[in-house]
Image (cartoon, rainbow, N blue to C red; front, side, top):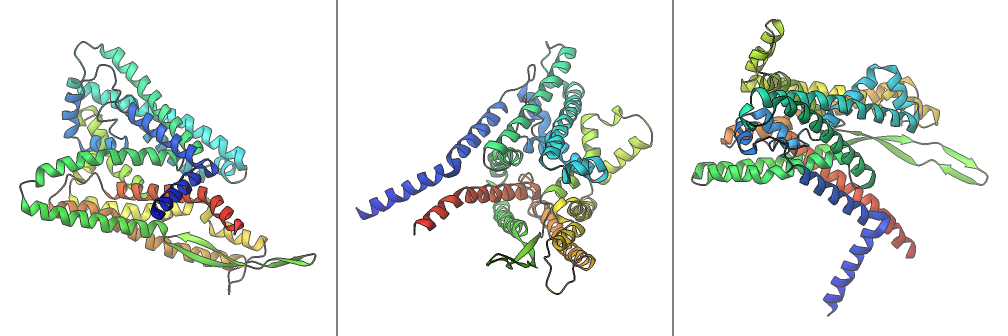
Length: 446
């Protein structure tokens, strides 16, 4: 009887916690948005034979890779086939432009909330442009390479124009859902949609893997080894996502009347992996760009000249495993340093100026330029360790898949693992944040 009362009390506490700070409403809203997104992935474009396109897409690694991030919408030629990709691309480009264009940098750093709203508006407009370009390229691929997937009685011209408009509108709709989830739900909306897209493909990978290892004991042992490596990789990803170098800051004491304020030591956290998954996404985008062009347009569709020779030659070069992995590793290391250098709150000079402005300091280091040099040294060391670790983590899944002979799980590569772990950690952290008022309330009652 006492055990039943204890369970009822625990359930009552859980329900009470869900109502704190609107957590229950936020969770419900997030679930509804995810359900709408998954429903839209099942709505195909008019005039497409999905079964025929599925056979075409099965032999195209580029479509398979992009399909994972669209939650299967691309493989089904859904009305939201482009997914959140154009919005992510637009956000990344705007971050890079903010570094080289002084006006955008001013909007981001000096104009406060109004400046950030303008940048968000520019990002949305740029998303429409990128979505239209990608939609046109995909429709061109359907009309040229995957023509058999289009039903024979469909007017080609109307299909092309209509599909471009629908795909662009679908991408804008997904962008709207992502921003709405960020504002009214739990976690980052864009990351949550990508997370759901990756999770939705796991049953497909599991089914394909089961078919090839079912009657082969050697592959079954290889599967156990591969899953163990994947689990260890996820542990490494968690460590890299949470690890940080804490620089102690001494704050001055101020006396106001009879009371003394401040004087407590704080710290500045320099994350081991400040760029998160962005360096990997950048590296993959650079490496896949020539191959993507060839997949969508074909070598015959490119004009003759040096550009065509470069794209074809680079694509052939990427077919070599060790060359691809070497370039991939070097790109990740270089892009990690680049991304760390453009993050606004990781600028040593600005941090040093702010510390000097408020009278704070690092123990044993003079304010001003010596502090900036010391912070730059610390940032360089932590970024180097993080870049090397991220590069190694990025190569582990693909190399392990080739060594074990099980390539059906390559979709769950480093990018997918880092995204899944990162989104899950951010989701849990935001839930803890919403539960803090409950903890404070119980503390004050004691």
